[in-house]
Image (cartoon, rainbow over all chains, first blue to last red; front, side, top):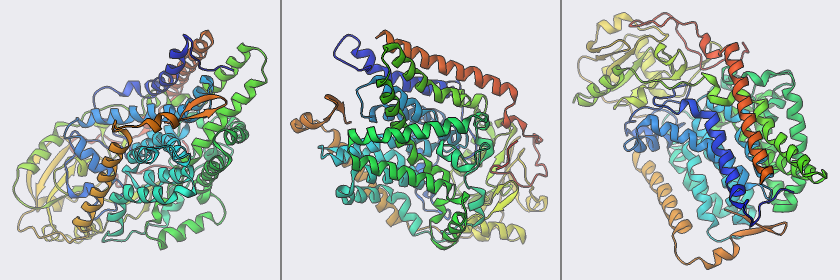
Length: 580
Length: 58
């Protein structure tokens, strides 16, 4: 077997995994790491995101991007938004394969490389990147680290809990990411640690959980979302096989073309069988109980991801999203397949390692590892270079900065409504790529945008009561000032109508090629309060920050740690396996 | 060590292959470039709703 050892090759063996991880990130992202913003579907970064109440969930919208927006608002006070965006994406692309390669319980560098590529170069990564779901990529990158520290906690290693907390923290930027990693933490840490892990999970997720619970509007979702966002068949084998292969996202536009190749399902099933065979090896090395828990969690992820595509599953989901507040998290269920990625990558790598034992010649074993490591790249070539043109950095037109400065400098009251009233924009300056309206993240005032989503032209009603209030007022030619709207932003060059009669009643303050800003004449009233109260939300944020800060001290403060040295590694087949 | 270098080279070769295949796929057609929308400089056109996405294959 090809193992690391205390010889001259040790350094290269140690560096092989980081080199592989950085290589994956570079090939995946290199062309888009230059200046400018990647603005694609839900991925909207701005030069400096204003620190408004809505970034912590104190707004009329459900906290789907909380505390991600708060973190971006704080971070962009130090780092420009486009630089921050690239750091986040590159970091996620490196951390995912690096974490998986370190997690696999082996002394074989080849096995680590197979696990790293199998985890870091997947349809899940490609599709979520092309859909702009960068928080999911972070959560995905955190998963193997969370499992590693969860297993360390299960083994009773010192300082494992604070390290687990720190591994979870980046993933709780959004509700779904937080839930995914916390489930993985609970499964890997085991029942005996459930109380401490569960408590930490609740505190870490409190920044979105508290505003969601105290939200003034409905936390129920439209039942139409279940069918629209259900996992999708990417080839002849149907949605379940697509999901098993870590793909199947609902949006066909985000799916790499290679996923439709007829042989893909065959390779998918071969890999799944190998991954399942590898579970026995995994169990023999990390213990039957944790291996079983991780596999069960992965299976649960596949079931949840496929639920809307199987008989009665869609009915169950529809009932849930209209009955149980917050169950809307279950829509776009394909994201839960991330839970399958860890046992899949580990099992596949260990199965390859086991198969290599049957090969007599060294070159044969090397060839096997090489083929296994390269296979994911061959099967998904169009993730390379961020999809070869799917993502291209662009710069915001100067109009955006001009309007933001005008709104910041003007002392008059009032929120902003962005027209056309739509969630998404398609601008020629962004290559006609669909992108979420950047106005709420660019302008220094609360900004109302449309919240109805359209999939294949079919509307999915949103949940923002303020957007509904604005929609009704516009439809009735009512007084926007009476509902707290002091400004109207008209975005040009994007699909959608704006009523000229409305603009005639407004005072134009700015006119540019891409944006116009109008002021609502007369008195501006107070906006109806749909937002949750500020104090409990701030308390939740403070608790989470306190937990992360104390974990940083407890996990990495250089106070005496003699016991750590004795137990920070585990024995795997007679060779110490770094646990963290 | 030579074996490790061999595997690493192969992985990088695979990435290069990914690159080449991606170039081919891109040349075959980038789905995002198919948006047949007016640029509408300085004016709003009459399309009403922008799809968040589509479940239909091209």
